[in-house]
Length: 588
Image (tube, rainbow, N blue to C red; front, side):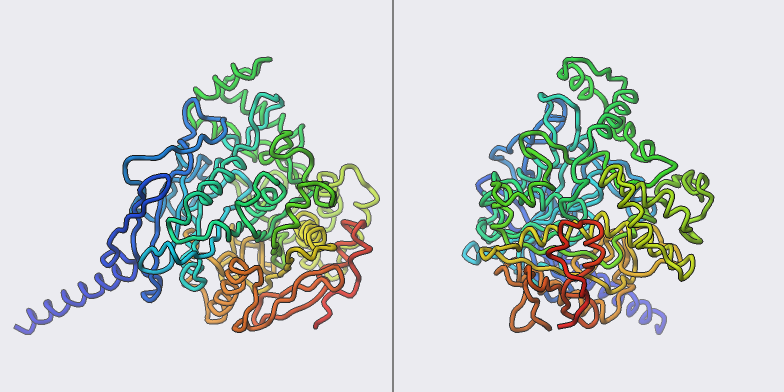
């Protein structure tokens, strides 16, 4: 009898735990909800975040016709009004076509050409069209070739920030950034997708209780570059009012160089057996007949990257097309009379970095290893990244390769950079100096340049700068070398999102959760009003201006400083030397 009672008790306990788990994810207590939009009816599903914050998610809403068959390599075609009910109960739909090597050992991903869908996350238990929530639209990153909405769950932002969050997929790789030297070929399709998604949001978000006149676009890495590019396109006026660029802005290598585009096009042609002709339509028709997986496998970037050098070159990404991107966007930043600059400066702008963005350098070397333990690059230069980056590798390969790809042949600057980052404190410090140089040249200095360009003589809108220094409990990407230290590229994303690829919540401590809540507060305050501070924020975040160039250090505790990285900025961008002093890190 006692055994029977014990079995019954155990059964009841299991059932209670199962019910609790389902309830925590909203699986039992999440009846569906229907919303009528100008585009058609959409079904959403109620759930709770941390068992206390209700929200409604609408997953898999099409914002354009599927770009398949004859629509491959064409601008997104606006979606018509559908008669059925759209929206799926899943957490996410498939990502856009890409190789799956970036996701090995993490979680199962699905990819499809039919991928132009967005997701909407609304706070609360009901849709109140009179509420008019502020809206944050997330643009994912990963070098224009990887990434998906399925990697980022914005429940934390929605629940604690009381805003609507929209995420969406856009075409990647050659599907989104086919760069053929032919005026009849539409370039920058991935950017056209992003504009189409923003247009859909502007037209439909009010049906979900969102305010179409209070939209902030936010991106990370290449997604931040896209957000910055969109803010330099006056045609986007009215689609968004604010921009948050995390670890990425328009820079010297934002657009693909013609010779790199030719390399990609040649590889694509050879591996798909589609011969280029003087008639681009014939070539494109051939490419449209090739299975999508074959196109993905035709262009593997590791096959294009030099094995004897490190560069900051872009092979797949935005290009000057005379339509969306009329001229080099980096030059437009300082052309204050241009319509592009005026539009950018009319928007509120937040930009910032982590303190070791150069972690991208070690990831670049690790990625080049493919399936071996040591890359051909390491063999050619006789070193192992796991142990160190020796000075001779930095001096003879990394520094000249990066400088040449950003500035052209410039031996004087290369010499100055080598001298500036030459460490006399041992090989491990030299390794980290090489990392710092890469991040400074490719991300940090361009970010300062964008902040200066936005804030100079600009009383119409607000500018803010931040720096994340708190080390992540679980770094992004491949495990870093033991000598590496700091907050690397992408390591701050856990502060905003629950990341599908990493069980980071299991590693987070109280101070990580505390900083996460504060960052969400700053970001969502900015999205609501243009001012990240309010009466409840720990410290007032001062605006960035030409005089003191304030920035906020996001660590534990949060601290305000002025004039970040001034000596390095003067080295890489001497034209800013009149605007950047050498008294960095003066505490307020």
